[in-house]
Length: 104
Image 1 (cartoon, rainbow, N blue to C red):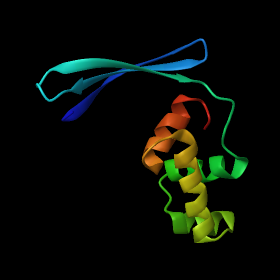
Image 2 (image 1 turned 135 degrees about the vertical axis):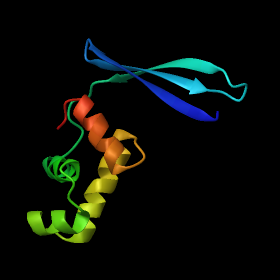
Image 3 (image 1 turned 90 degrees about the vertical axis):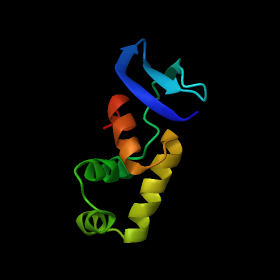
Image 4 (image 1 turned 30 degrees about the vertical axis):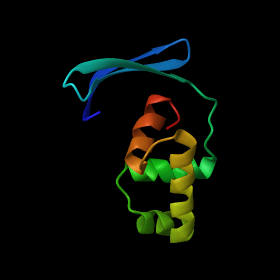
């Protein structure tokens, strides 16, 4: 698949987040993909949520560590665990998904 175009159509129904995507395949045709995410009870710890909120506000890991009086490495560990728990690729995707799921 060559590219992804995301439709801005997210609908929350019965505790599920439904997203619709159009993916451009090798034949240059768009294929419709619908993704359902069951809304989870909060899988993130209180500290992970704190860190993610600060990421959302634009703080860097060093600034977050100073603000929360924890080490830089601990901040990065929290960020990595959030990414793993939410199944995303980076912190910004984590912020977007956590916001959509009502975790932030």
